[in-house]
Figure 1 (cartoon, one colour):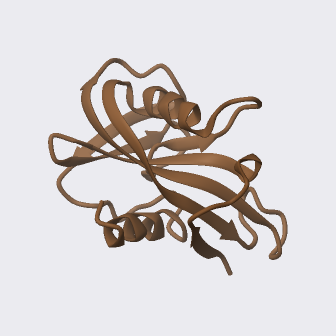
Figure 2: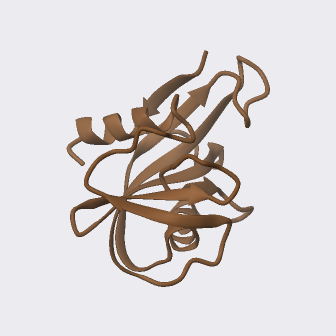
Figure 3: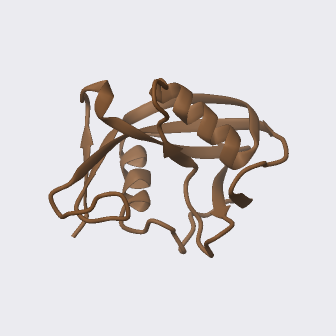
Length: 143
C-alpha cells in the first residue's frame, strides 16, 4: 500500500523530487515518456547540490520544452510504501510540489516523447497512486 502525505516543513536535505503541475493558456500540460504509454505531471530527481527550485525549473524545461514560465511551490509531499523508488513498505521519500504557468515552449530534447495539452485531467496516469493525489491537494489549496 502506498500512502501520500502532505507537509508544511521538512529538512531541505530530505527533498529528493520536484513535481510541477503545469498549465498553458488555461489547459493542463502532461508528459509522455518514450518508454511508456501513460502520461504524467512533469518532474524528476534532484541532482546533488541542486536547490529544489532549480530542480523544478530544470525538469519543467527538460520535460515540456518550457522556456518562458512562472513557477511557485505548493507544498511538500511524501510517499511511503513500496514503489519503484522505495524498496520496502517502511521507506518514505519526500518531494516538493510546484505549480507553473507556461507562456512559451521550444523543442524537447529529453526522454520525453511528447507533451499533451488538454482541458481535462488524464485517465491513464504513469503514477496512478501518487500524482492524482498531488493534483487533488493542489486543488484543495486553491491552485
